[in-house]
Length: 106
Image 1 (cartoon, one colour):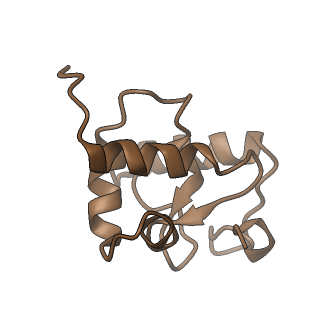
Image 2 (cartoon, rainbow, N blue to C red; image 1 turned 120 degrees about the vertical axis):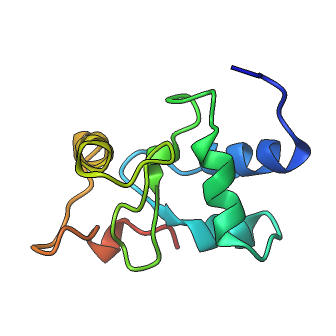
């Protein structure tokens, strides 16, 4: 894997590292934290995260509070893994599989 990290990726990874266990932020929230207008760009940076789990990309979710993708994958195995990691940290989900809102970063 190419370990060359862009300045943008560094900003995304730094912001993501600030999300404590048991909490989540949306891709859009991370984008706003770093002064970027694109939640998709944040997702693309996290898709390439070579520092997991030190950079906890599993704590970044979709705006509808669904898990979103995990390492660029959106299939059931990837989403189940992301959900298991969040549950291990105390994050709870509603009956539709969305993160309960009390876990969102303020």
